[in-house]
Image (tube, rainbow, N blue to C red; front, side, top):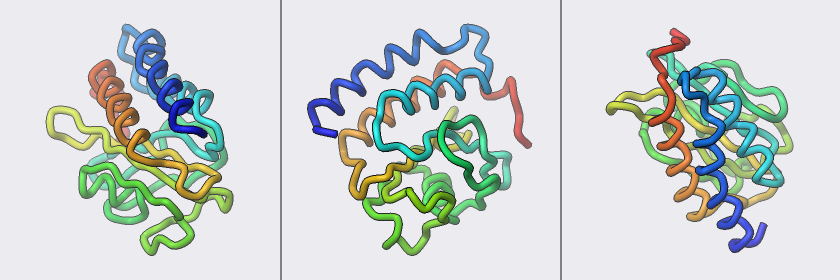
Length: 162
């Protein structure tokens, strides 16, 4: 995906997300629509979804794509690393990344954005692409904005995974 195309796609995502998010703040509904919006807008994805933190580990939540790991320990894999460090992690080639958990052999690159609300870890947004080096600084910028808007407009107290 060319940079200009990627930017145009992302510039439509956050306003689209705002329109789709439930005014009732239903956690599962909001996460489901958010993963669907990203799945449709970004080509070459093999997984687009969420893991929620239950106080001990990350638990699989709404997603689009193929099957995935159900539980991830903090620090383990790219999702666990992002959650533990509370920062976005981009991996250009997951096959060469030592701390990678393989759930789908088609995944070649990954980006994980932590979901933080009131300084507490809520979970992570996880995207895997079938192309090496798919994610870059454009994805970081727009996915962090997307995640922040989602966290702002969703009542994560409504649904507890732990």
